[in-house]
Amino acid sequence: MELLNLYQNNYLIVFVFLCLGVLLPVVALFMGKLLRPYKPLESKYTTYESGIEPFHDSRVQFNVRYYIFALMFVIFDVETVFLYPWAVAYEKLGIFALIEMLIFVVMLLIGLIYAWKKKVLKWI
Image (cartoon, rainbow, N blue to C red; front, side):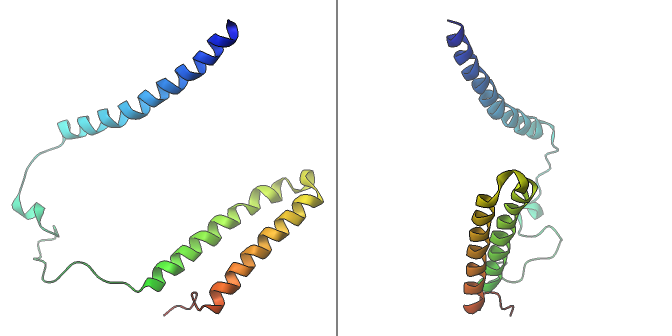
């Protein structure tokens, strides 16, 4: 019976956090709507609030290389984060972890060389 109560308490805690996770944003948004100043002006519904009338389309087309370059940076940046815990716990992990990390770094280097050969890293 005690194990059943412990099991139900775990679900009760999850339910309380689920309710709080839904209730807090709803209350915050409602309070923000209730307390904010409401002064509708036609100029606030234009594209810019700087006072200057828009004179052409606000959408600007960027070269896709900028996005690919940023994506490559994020990928390699996130992958190097995995190196830190390994370096901290290296003495406890042993030679097997060293081999795994070498395989990981070689895979990263293969990806970097591939991107370099495809001229993805060439800035325009």
